[in-house]
Amino acid sequence: MSLHVEPMSRRRFLGWGGAGAAAVLLGTGALGGTAAHAYTLRKSGLFSLGIASGDPSPNGFVLWTRLAPDPLAPDGKAGMPDRRIKVEYEVARDERFRKVVRRGAAVATPDLGHSVHPEISGLAPGREYFYRFRAAGEISPVGRTRTLPAAGSLPRELNFGIASCQAWQDGYFTAFDHMVDEDFDLIVHLGDYIYEYEITNNNRRGVTVPPQFGTETFGLDRYRLQYSLYKSEQPLQRAHAQVPFIHTLDDHEVVNDWAADTVIAGRNPNPDPAEFAARKAAAFQAFYENLPLRRAQLPAGPNIRLHRRIAYGRLAEFTMIDTRGHRDIQACSYGNGTGRSNSCDERFDAARTILGEQQRRWLLKGLARSRARWQILGNQVPMAQTDWDPSERTDVWLDPWDGYAADRNKVLAAAHKGGARNLVVISGDRHQNYAADLKEDFDDPDSPTVGAEFVGTSVTSGGDGADIDDLGRLFLSANPHLKFFNAQRGYIRVNLDRERWRSDFRVLPYVTRPGAPVSTRATYVVEDRRPGVQEG
Image 1 (cartoon, rainbow, N blue to C red):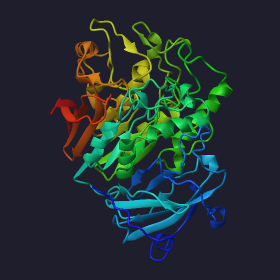
Image 2 (cartoon, helix red, strand yellow; image 1 turned 180 degrees about the vertical axis):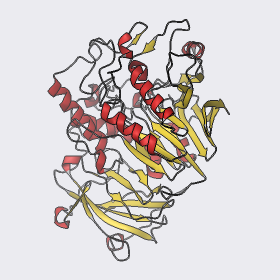
Image 3 (cartoon, rainbow, N blue to C red; image 1 turned 135 degrees about the horizontal axis):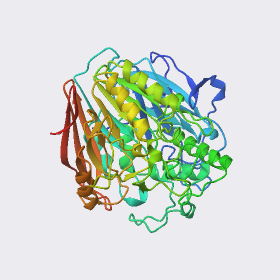
Image 4 (cartoon, rainbow, N blue to C red; image 1 turned 30 degrees about the vertical axis):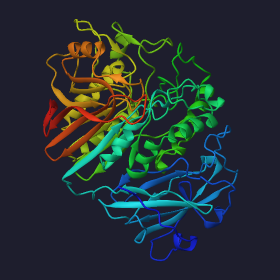
């Protein structure tokens, strides 16, 4: 769809009559109007990082933008002054904004990188809306978004995309252009939105990056710059502007393989706890500043709440979890890296957790109470066992759920015994596509299948990739519950209705140059009340 911006006067843009309640927000919270300052900037291009919507509900969504006339300014302030700036917004039924239903203003502050996150409510369920911003006399592009179906309804179907892992230096974000063309109801992004690695001029784009990118990401200014670089990608901006996102984070938004309050030594030498807490606080703030997240996800220093539920009527419920912030350090690591192990009994320790006790209770209580037909668990790292050894021995990575076998067994057994209907786990992290059965206990050959997992490959991370390689053949021979493997780049297209879930593994032949076509490599389905995956 082509979106149109109609020229208008300031008076018409902020004509309060008949548009519902107006609010002035300081990024997220209500404030009096005197907190907002009109300010004329000498630079244009305030909306260089785009606009977005996210975490939709039946009566609204959160909107986002971040003012950035100079997004790669070395100080991380994106060319903005140390002043609060009023940002006006409109939401309409039509793209020409003749039927405006909400108007208001938010205050972009230096403390939040001049980002705003107005939460819109009071709208009709299951409907398309258009939105835009205005600041310092400049009007943003027009965005499109949707509210979710009414809470008690049983929609006919849901169409959504699954994305993760987008290393800027590894390739072009072409996958997002194809995702927009799919006309999804929403996109679930499962983490590694950025990578904390340094970026040099030796990248495949032939782009000269400023020298400040030549160091690993640590402080707030550097995290902000990393997001600015990534969000300069036009396919990503286009996807954000036209489809609501649901976000979580994995490890690279902070640092590779971090676990709660710990960074694994060897690859990332363990810092002083206060130093790592400061790094997490900076990373979480930049994550919040640059994405369409609600007030509930506003971090408090080195803490952020990512677990939440988003219901799509009674057809499906997304339960988003956090497998980084509350976990124990990886089993048998002893500060020497996460790696793999075929002799790590510690991974079976019943006291070890990837979720934390409080989040696990919240998860299981929600699964037991939910009446949704499809229980979708938005998860960062693969849950199904991925054994490297086709013999009777078991050789697994220790960073994903394989390193926390007892916690995995608790969750899957409780979901099965509690009657959770149609448990489907969606995961990222691995840069590979999997379709797998979830077993109540992967060490018991007779253990029942209790759910399905679809692991989505990366958008770019790992470069062009391959259809199937030696690792894929090994995985398929060593893991009878693993039904499909592929290591190309792309995303998963999901269509589900009341009787069937369909996952299309959409792949690109290359990402190291722009313009790649997309095709469906394989299709796997899950049938209502029949746990596990089947070839479609």
